[in-house]
Length: 75
Image (cartoon, rainbow, N blue to C red; front, side):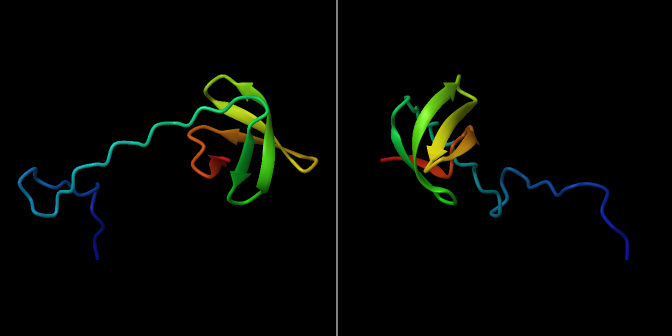
């Protein structure tokens, strides 16, 4: 069998062409906010590194969560 050289393109009029969903807005966190992470559990924001990352204390374990914070929710 032969492999294709590139990815498939769909024509704009194709019934299989699905418009892309707009990205959800990036949530804003402040120092002291209580948060919940899908993997690490409950924590508190201890620092902010601009819009790129937040530092979170998960019961004595420090974590640096990168933007867009998909697994982190504010409580």
